[in-house]
Image (tube, rainbow, N blue to C red; front, side, top):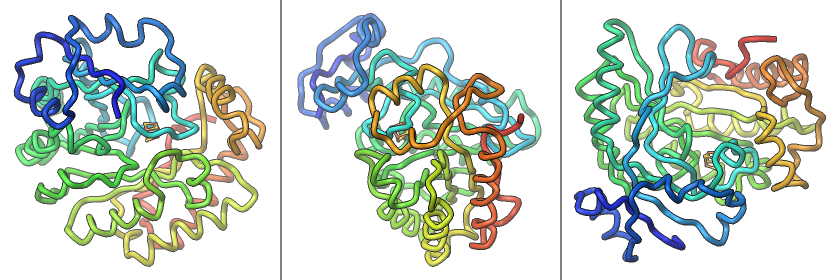
Length: 334
Ligand code: SF4
């Protein structure tokens, strides 16, 4: 799978790095710092199809980031933690294609430091829940059989019932997850597109049907679940597509179990939009005109966004998702 594996030389003796390398059976190249090489020159995003490199590194600088307004449920602090860059999947709308200079994957291995920072942040908010989201720059489960860090974050949740961790994913790689006991504050959230749309735009990911099957298994074992319908991409029959998606979730008795369901309509920064046009010129994403919006993002015009979100919200309510569980993502302003 990996063209080359680079490891920061200071880390080569670390048990976590040795464990990862032991599973890969490929000799690493030792380097001083991952960013001496990674992203130094532009590597076209689609080169990930033929030549994906892996970097094992120590995350320096900012380990947690305050999430932007309207990122999660309102009225509570939200942070995301950075334990990896880039992803093995290839969703056509992925913002990573215009965010980094390289699609090569970086796995940061200093999870103890990330968790220490999470603890300090939690302590700085002495009351109420504090959210920590994984998966902002990567998928949260796709490589967990390799990286083996889940139990550390799970243990942090066990010690801190006020800390809410969200593992956001499109993966069905639940092998490591299933070794852990379900916790109410250790939430696995699945991003779902309707089956028909997903086939076209969620490239290399497990199918929507496979993701829902895994949601069903996790639900039966008592795990806390959430879902994201984000990005919603307009198609003439989008209501029918979301009706069918919600019907399947309802038949699996999942709609009432969702701690939250976020709804967001497709949107891009200018740079990402340019990349999407270049990488996927035939994508259905381009079949509906977009405008530059209040925050300089490229998206459908406001009445259309609100109509789409409210239509899907109505379908979700009809399928049994609680009104208090639904939130509209990144739509604070007109
Ligand atoms: S799963 Fe998420 S991070 Fe991975 S390619 Fe798709 S949108 Fe990007």
